[in-house]
Amino acid sequence: MLAPKQTTIPTLVRVKPGALDRLGIYAERHEFARIALFFSRDLDARLLARLTASLQARDIEILRQTPVDSHGLEKVTDLFRECPRNADAIIGFGGGKALDVAKYIAFLWRLPYFSVPTSLSNDGFCSSQSSLTIEGRRHSLPAALPAGVIIDTNVCLNAPAILWHSGVGDLVSKFTAVTDWKMAFHKAGTPVDDFAALVSDASVYQFMARPKRDLEGIRLLGTALLLNGISMSICGSSRPASGSEHLISHALDSLSKRPRLHGLQVGVATYLISLLQGQHTGPIADLFDITGFWQAIANDPFDRAEWVEACRVAPNIKPDFYTVLSSRDCLPEIERALDSDSKLRQCFG
Ligand SMILES: [Zn+2]
Image (tube, rainbow, N blue to C red; front, side):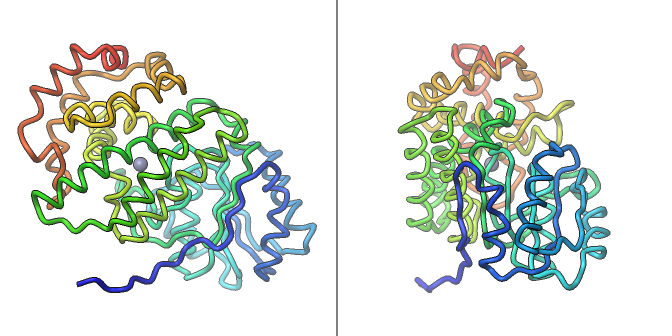
């Protein structure tokens, strides 16, 4: 039966150069007088100074500034207890760990959360999940979408190029994720939310129309990843943004001696899965050529044996999650592709 769903979607979205210096204005408009700030411990001190100056210029009190270098749930529990109870809102500033921790603490306290990423390496800055570790293993815990997303495109443009490549890899996985989702509908009766699938699909094409690493390209990547995060929240499932390519990446996270950035693993897995699905391979390969993604991987190649093992265990990671990997024993095809496909061969040392 079709029933209306309640989803809180960010009402404040700023994706532009200099947005960081206007954070105080945005917070003031939302009538936040006191905030708690969580930031990446290795963040450039000049960026932190800009953010605090912007808040102080509007007389917004920073009750507590907490550097984050761990996203272990045990540590997060301590930070949750220490978070001032009289804060009007929580701001997460920096990379993935700090944003995931801030988002989760805001969710536990039921406080509005502002997400201020300094790079765009995956879609986590605007998702309703927090990626945290429990006893060293990564888990996606339910949280809420941010009330505000502020992306300073100049700041993100100055982040290392490899983080941009990771963002491109995570974005392009929507092709294979949506194909897996539709396959799951036909083979296993998994319900598909057409609107969420549409948003996810459209976000990739929006970026592909102009895949450049400049201010406008950062804006397009940022908005596309943001819409992806929202599409997951709309349907209450990770399906529009995560399919078998993400299963392979999750497997690598637990078995690899040196797991890489999420979007780098996911990007290569997306290309591999597109071969199994028989769709989208050409556009993905071209996008990776244009953006320099292939070269970024070739500069620090993956371990083939680890990938074969990850592909072997991937179909069994999530129960009741039908993907192309469930449709047949794909391992022989995967091994053939790793050896014979010219794009994939350069990804492995
Ligand atoms: Zn992802």
